[in-house]
Amino acid sequence: MDSVGNIILYVIVALSMIVFSFMSVTSRKILRSATYLLFVLLSTAVFYFQLGYQFLGAVQIAVYAGGIMVLFVFSILLTHRPDDKSGKIDSHRKVAGVCGSVLGAALLLFALLTMPVTAAGTSLTEVLSAGSSISMADIGHTLLGTDKFHYLLPFEAVSVLLLACIIGGVVVARKR
Image 1 (cartoon, one colour):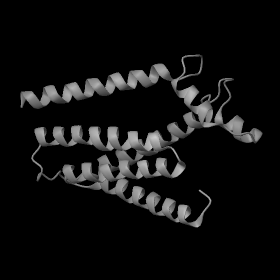
Image 2: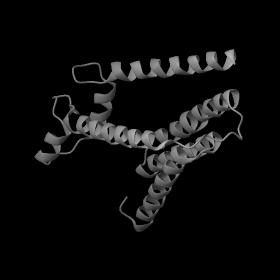
Image 3: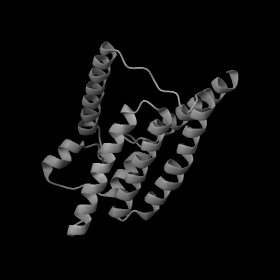
């Protein structure tokens, strides 16, 4: 990413991702919100392609932008009319939502900086303060490894939770 064209493309895609993310959570029409989420997922695929990870970019488009968005739109059309608008959010809910978002972001940042990211159990803060770098192989091995300080089990638990949510959504849609 050292050429001027790549930097300009990065800025354009990053700005579009920010704008579509904001529009996705603030839109009152749920089908439009899902469409904006599709653009965010496609922007993520552009980042993968720009980094040279063609396989991850293709998977992002096929699985997330394709398959998951089809499930979202299918479930939206099963449970709501596409032209329905959501009501305005009360001010006390806005404050609670902002407080929850800030708390969640702080917890994620804390976890990112303190959780071990290498096989030796060193955190990201320790690696960055030592001036060394982390390779993509180290990150992949840490995320999908089964040793101590690896995250395969939580990754699989989240996938089972998402499957349970999809099944629950279908059951709720059928009872209506």
